[in-house]
Amino acid sequence: AQKVTQAQTEISVVEKEDVTLDCVYETRDTTYYLFWYKQPPSGELVFLIRRNSFDEQNEISGRYSWNFQKSTSSFNFTITASQVVDSAVYFCALRGMDTGRRALTFGSGTRLQVQP
Amino acid sequence: EPEVTQTPSHQVTQMGQEVILRCVPISNHLYFYWYRQILGQKVEFLVSFYNNEISEKSEIFDDQFSVERPDGSNFTLKIRSTKLEDSAMYFCASTPAQTYEQYFGPGTRLTVT
Image (cartoon, rainbow over all chains, first blue to last red; front, side, top):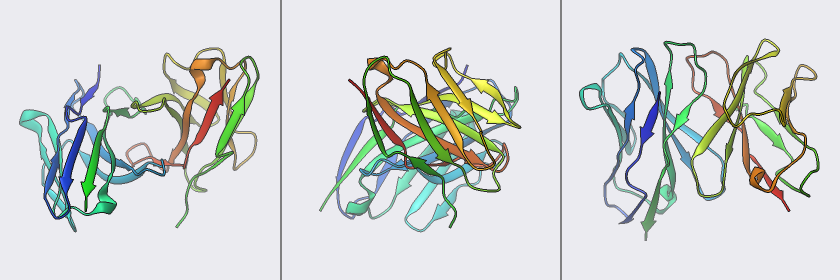
């Protein structure tokens, strides 16, 4: 069975603070993909990043960075110098590849509120 | 930039009625999906579709649900007899290959009264 846990239900920060969103996953698959999606108040799901299980390099994209640690089954997401526009619900998701499954398993999401 | 589109954006229906939610995936994508999100909850997988057939479905996707790709562009989700608990946001997604990220449409909010 696959499972994604986002223990932080809601985080509130003040603009320009750094914030880290945690994601812990469980899977028996040896090959899998991890994703982060952003859901702004308008409701759509916006793809942010995909990472495969064989690539543990951290990634930085502008103010966003991701830390993948296979040893702790974590794929954390950090926003540096947060802005009001970052306010959204952020979902971590997992897709196991060993059994040919195509579904994404989502975590329950972390609501980020960035106050001006 | 190509995107997944969904219609309608909001559908209100009475319990027991049939609804059809429509999606136009990105044109060169081969894999199609439906997910749903009950208000305030996580996104849940319903079904995946490839090569004109269902490739995977969840426990939620029971006999009341069906999917179809009636032509080369549309991908539909039908709920035969809606229940109150079917009220949710329904997202369509597509991807060009299994290993790629899934691109989601803006969603259809279904309200069953």
